[in-house]
Length: 271
Image (cartoon, rainbow, N blue to C red):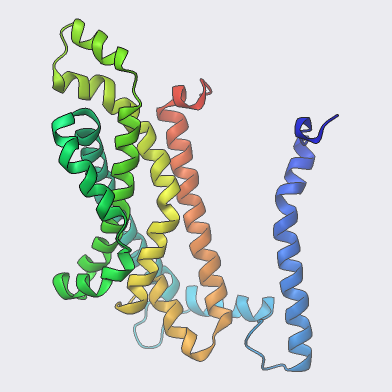
């Protein structure tokens, strides 16, 4: 049998899923044990007990200065910024995608503009955002919006242009106007694609958020990571990175389940 036709059984699939993570963790803790044995004060590869102490300190012990539980406070600030940016980006991207994908007159000017804007590195204009919008929350949200919206709009425009022309012809034959076409034909197709596009752009959204928080913030996951780096506090940085990864994975899982529930037809008929 050719290997391309071999599929893992359920038990083997779980084993193969866990294997890379187990190997990475084993390599880390073996390296940590070796370095800590040579130097008990080594900060580069902290052991499990050191990281658990850091989690206890950051998540379950009130800060002496503010009285806040820092991990949860940072998480709340970051998620608020991220979700606000994603919501605005989704609304703008969907609107632009519909207009550029359905109406040729609007596409003639809007599509090239989105193409040019999407080529601008968002981090390159971060100083401009701080100058224009200030150092508060708006500049961080706007970085996510500027970084995500053009890519969303271009993807949704392309999806709208891939809708078979026969559907538009049949709808117009039955008396549908432009507004009805958008609501009944285009929008269901693009809402499905919007969720998929948001899943694919979650990593970029987190990147923009962490970058903005690292430069100008007083709370947030990115702010905390770059604050403690000056002390080489890897026992704090690594749990924070793991926590960010877990949050991103949970967001991706939520969007995936939402897509399956709301658009089973886009899942190949699997509800």
